Length: 172
Picture (tube, rainbow, N blue to C red):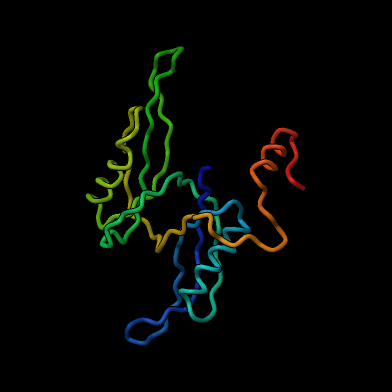
């Protein structure tokens, strides 16, 4: 299953180290199946981080297709990479490129490129890193599958899911 990434901007009042209050609008990336789920997930995440009032000032579908995390605790920034996947047209023989966007955790540009190259090392098709840029994302919240299912919904069992697919039913 592929991830559906949403960019959420959260506006709230932050208290600086010197005790002064400042209005901030921070960006986060969240994996969700819909806008509604993305809003719900970002609100749940923010409740544990922010004390006081906050609101989601923007929520949009992201063009990020893959997130490359890092185990290094110093890799606390997020960089966005545009990767050209190079393919040859079988009919004309010309090369054509399709682009994918990666979000890479790293401490600086050099480390971001290293982490990206390590992630892409399993590619069997030629590729080229077209661009690498710093982002304003404060954090990324991937979907782990252990979130609670609401009481009014129940997951399909393996047999039910197969039967629904073969009959074209959507489980409703």
